[in-house]
Length: 247
Image (cartoon, rainbow, N blue to C red):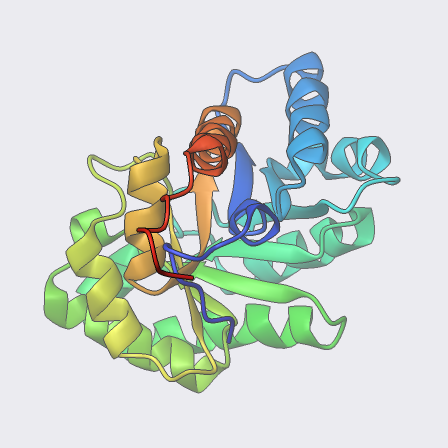
């Protein structure tokens, strides 16, 4: 698992934390193309697009270092497992190499852990045989801490690649407490992704310090422009003058 430090992080590292989110329902194809071009300019890790836009994103990004991701069972997680598996297969056929799957929130809250585990495992198996990564979205706004911990344990068993806080469409998104809790309850084999409400450079650095290695963001340009500006300001600072008689 990558180890990141907000004090020493480089531009390349912080850009590759960001999954540039293009999931709002009103986005047109022109909006998606512009979003993909922005992600390519800034060298984000991925774009996360709606399933209907995977082929388009793959074409726009074919000569870039940005990967294409999409969502499964989004945003409520309530699709039947067979539908989630079919959705994952179609997304991969269209060019997605990362899948952000929403677990079945209502079944988790009902204590149906066998169902939730089977649901996650089915999508993970489908993806992993094709070397595609899976992030499982909890939607923490609706869960107790005990339910979040249970979700972490189920994801560990299922072999997910990331656990993720939120869709960005619930009443609240990523919190630092939730990120710390999730990081504490999965092994080093499982990474943590923040999503929802991370719109500034300080907020992104905070989630990195809580153990997140990915973060969904719509404010990618503002965040990374701020990072570039701050590093430039530091580079322009005058160097201390040595006292007489010192080296």
